[in-house]
Image 1 (spheres, rainbow, N blue to C red):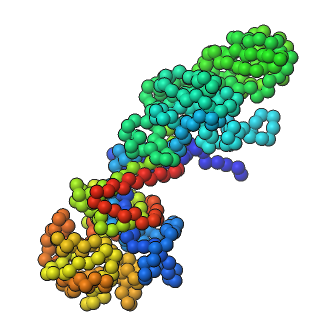
Image 2: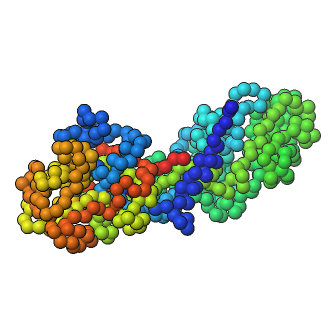
Length: 486
């Protein structure tokens, strides 16, 4: 039984996701980074690295329960995503001279009357949101193409912010929709996507059910040459009027002189053309292009296909203004989005959260090096160094479920514990954990140990991306723009 999920359902889902950041009882989202060790190969079917840590191309994550557990094994830190970090988005389409743009039609994909073919755009698109019917200019103004002059190339850039449909020198017709603000340009503009938002001035001026474009489907024959005015637009709306030009006894142009209101369908009768002076025209058929609900510009998000949501997050060095939770001593290869994680047994709320574990050492341990293996002979615990803070004698580390990163010789993931010596395998560092409870640089230790600020395996991991290694530095900011398509 033929059926579809409409694009409105996709819009609905994007709206629900966007609203979840700001509603009265919002979800809490964190964008995290992880995997300081190399992507690699192994003979073990569940492994993600080999013993030598040979760097290979990142693999596509699996959508599985196991993959979600992997995320917390090597999670380094996460930053809260707020409502101001979120925007509806659409594919970016820059206006470029010499390009043939599609024009807005309400019936792309519908069967053409009298045949079995479907209505397609000049680009070949069979749906509105696959069509190239809007552009952004170098002025960051966004315009919807109302008419493309019979499929000709666009050679005059649209400009201005008038609420009326503008006609450029190349006979294209455009409708101004909105302008990307300075903030949107910085935060929600990428090579491939851009923010979409409704301009309130444009929205309030929109006319529901107006008809501003009528296309010639069949030119007909036998008409009286000339321009014949005051031809009514029939349908379920009112006050629509057009003029029809006949040359060579066939229709060559149709101009809307009054757009009317309230149309959800419309048509121009040949009899009305003839009554207006068209003579004995026959066989002509004209397509009235029906505007979206509310009219052009009433709701830019729905009209331009805003079923994408863009999240924009900056990782600024060590995030020193937020407890310095982001290490700059190691790289990362994974980006994740986690919904409603816990911290210390309660719902997470801090701006940043550290994911790596930590041990406070005493004495003169020497210097542990990033990515080296550490062991505790007494317990059999194994880990990998993320960073060593020699000033405060804090050893940050991760433990995974793999033999070369966290599991002991018996296959157990054993925790470091007690005042038992910890030894680096590639450095000569040897440290003794503190036996006291204390706080050093906002890290609270109980008997020398801290489990990190993100409770493992809490919340829902809703996005995972493996990347090539990204090296961090204290004076560096990584800007991550995550595009979610619904």
